[in-house]
Image (cartoon, rainbow, N blue to C red):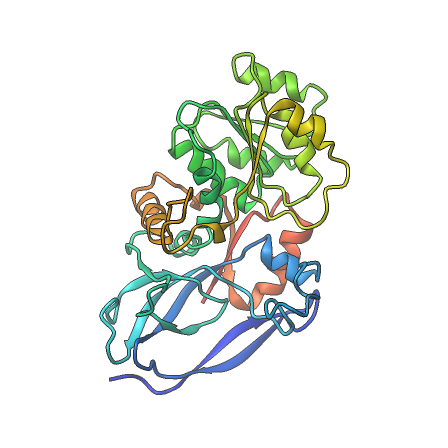
Length: 344
């Protein structure tokens, strides 16, 4: 029997740099729906901070319906099914699932739709880790776009949440040597917890020489830009070996104005490729056969087996009521704030 309407709370951004915690009603699930109680939700430091600071390029685009103020953030969480509606066979009451959760206590989820991004996850995976499963498909796209990985040198520029997850996924996929590049010392320290990973600072005057020293005399085969800064593409291209690949996974927002594509790209026969999570579709696409179900099943298996360890990068796991402090910390204190999850 479905429960009565439940009162929940959620994070809302009514304006730039503003967070409110608002109450709402979560109704009983209808046909094809499940009512899920959220355990934890992960903050996307890229997309959510872009909206929080008002710089997301679609906020002012009248042709886009998302994102707009007031904005309810969040798209990755873990929780438990409390009730199901008529015709639901995909989940059962009591199941623990991951789905694109907002930062809120309850959600009514359409679980029987063909594109329902709802997947079971084992009880032993900590909530603050399981909360990142849906978000992790975005850095996974970098691997899908990297062609051959095993035994190839990969350098990841930008060791925030996306970069740290990408680094660990490349390690699980057999990349070697594996190098992290970031100006924040604590981020480099976190990256070095992955066995075999070396790190460098981007302002190192001997950066290229040190990259060659770590890779047996050659620059990296693959450079992954997870910085989110558009002009970082020029640096990323300069660090890749001739004929190498540069993968843009950090959702760069803005214009790269000082790139000489004639020499920086064309003259060196580099491959420059975008890697956004939306590229992984629900059905195989030409030249892109990977699908959302395959991606999620792989990510969950990696988390459940411990081959993808994310607990070490979660710096804060706090009550949802502290969301404002978490956004400000991610924005202004990169030494101490890394991956952040909210507890519900």
